[in-house]
Image: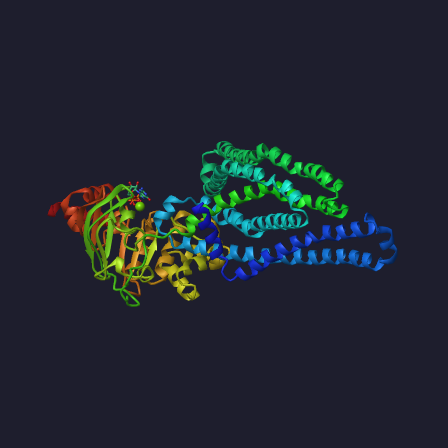
Length: 600
Ligand code: GTP
Ligand code: MG
């Protein structure tokens, strides 16, 4: 009960700005249902005065005017009622769409500001479902379910009041049925609530399957797994469909009982009302009014099941939406952040840093310092923790132990935005947006001039292949840059990282897919950047790292070797082996290898 109340509270909070409009809509709902009840009142008058009363014939002769007035009144009330129904419908639609718009925007912002941990937990398809299908169930609650609840109850209440006013004994005999119906509804609710939770889960699973297949379509094709994927999807689809059916069938178990009770109403009326009529406790007109109003009791009773069903749908969906709504990122601005200068100098220091993903330790006691403007290379076999290490600098994750400093200030003391805007990063798996090449390179600053975009494309050795594209810089590169080669994507992502003129440039395996010639061009460009910049370069090739001021070799999350190219060659460790392995490639390397052997 507590959870439900807070859901309604949440809904109410999000109706801010629309509350008056909504309450007005609810008031309209009560009004048009109350007006519904005037029809039997009119009929009662007409029957008693003009059809069955002892003076009926005389009234019909002398009081034609009243009859006409009653008839016109009936028509007028009906018309008025229709207008109110129309207006309240508009009103509910406007409020619910307004709230939906706001909550969806809010959720998007929430998701946007989440940290990596969040994305490790929630799958894309699941988040999409929460933002669309689940959120729509919330809208349905505002636009329809609450309205139906008010409608049913106001109708029942108004009918009950009217019955009691006319004859309380007859009213009581009709209303005696109500508790049984409510009991059935409560039993139904208990049964159907968990099914709706399951249903939302199945929908999310199905959407995730679709999303992953669209995303990974190339892999599916490469392995010719279409049949397998189709089967897998069919299974998800069937599960969703079946759960949907089962949920609908639950009501079928309860429906006959509700229907029986609802159908008892006219029978009770016929029996008790008939006796009352014979005993002249009520008039013929009153009897007609009673029978004209039994539907006002019976219909809401019949509808309660549907309403309860919808309510449970909302309940399950809103739980999923609220989970995101109230989720908080763990990596946030410092409570009292330092005032960072517009541009950082780019000194980086790791002081005894260890890091674990959840419970999986990945980095152990890492310490090193990079002075502003220096280049540091990080090497090591796959899975040793290189990417994990660099992700700590822009605080994609926070270190589990130890501290990281940028410009002698703990990274946790900066505003995230101040810190991150100083860091240019080309990630290991390149993601380009469905936008022009120009738009992709200028992503970090939408006011960037074309001239600047071109210049950095030049630095990244991308200018040439871009000029050969059908529309040059205006070529749209598809979702994830389909249509570009791996090396081309890497170069665009490098240009994107460089174009913001960062104080710290992080390249995670960014030139792994480009040829040696191009790589050399890029390295020369990086050495002669027009702005001061500390560079962290993760690479496997000696040619990418040899010129670094410092090379770190990681092994199983620990620094195994540290020093310049010459020092590490002399040390004859992992790096030396690597040089030997790649040595045949370049004359220069061989020279140095000799030098190293002499020294070592
Ligand atoms: P390459 O890019 O292949 O050269 O490897 P790397 O040195 O960049 O390794 P990385 O830092 O990506 O991963 C280090 C270890 O952490 C590996 O054993 C991964 O399995 C693990 N790891 C990486 N990312 C995650 C993650 O998001 N969650 C968890 N639990 N483990 C991760
Ligand atoms: Mg990596």
